Length: 298
Image (cartoon, helix red, strand yellow):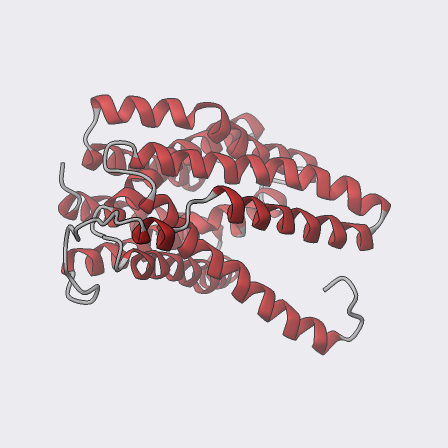
């Protein structure tokens, strides 16, 4: 990518890069499920989310520093770090086929096809509603902070950084406590409810910076309470023969919610105003809260 100069060549390679990047996600989730169990699965995925957020925070800072000196160098650094990650995966991750050859076999917990798993299909449809609301955090919410609340770019950056920093600092502790004290149903419903409260703050108040800070804290708490439970829900329905397929559909759900619903949110903000967008997000999140409560068992 760093060597290309032609616009159309860049478009083609961008498509290929996106396909390769997204191919990593289902395999990564399937591996997490393969090497965890029902007792530590929520903590395993929480640890993975922690590493993603830490990498996001550190990588963004390093990327900005490198790009300031040379954009060409940025592509080389990015490529080398990916090669290093591939080598670590190759040498450190146990090979499933080698394990099977040694005679270690696991009986399938369930033998259900994905489309006939009605609870999972319902879960995916509900998740489209919730994730379509959640992804506004990365797109339309910063625009609202800039254009409507007139925050400077550095303050918007602080709010975004606070989201990742809070996850790194306390999410593992919260998930450990939830596993001991709460049911999965309580965690996910309270988590999505925090999402509702956060966006209702934008509907009813013209927030100063400290108010936006509280609002971002509520969204982050919502994310921490809900996401590990959601991944654990579909992962518990899988076995070694179909885990990758479930993971792929979960990845597609994220992509569908992010690509289409952010554009719809932008159109609504343009023609009906941000207040209407945030009210819609709150109402849809409320709907998702009640629907999740019906299908996620204790």
